[in-house]
Length: 129
Ligand code: C2G
Image 1: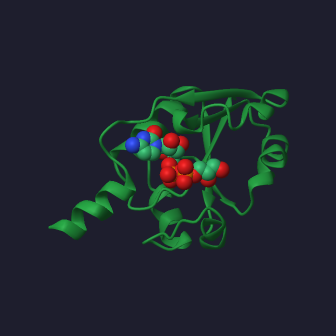
Image 2 (image 1 turned 90 degrees about the vertical axis):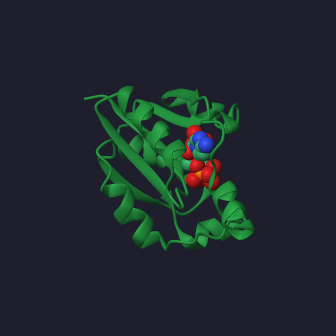
């Protein structure tokens, strides 16, 4: 079984996230999502609208997602890859190059981001209207 992992905040889930999760799942048979906790979001200078528990509930409802684990720090990826026997690490290409050190442990793939949508854009557009 080919296992894929990706990480993110996935707040205000939108079709750009779904495109990423769909393509990530298509690379293997089992997709794990490392979901940023509310505390880790603070380290990423992000504030989620939805709590970790609710973002987890939403992600677990998506057909492409097989398992959701908490992302609590920048340096847990190697351990996650080893403990979950991951074959492929996937991120959107806004992260291009940032995780190349993981190539010692698994395949690293950066997928093109979906243009025209982001959680930040949603928040901004809602504020204007
Ligand atoms: N994404 C995308 N297209 C968009 C928006 C997001 O492909 N229009 C992708 C991002 O590239 C990322 C994933 O969706 O791979 C989740 O996006 P975020 O929740 O913004 O994740 P981020 O805050 O970048 O967290 O350790 C890694 C970090 O936790 C990544």
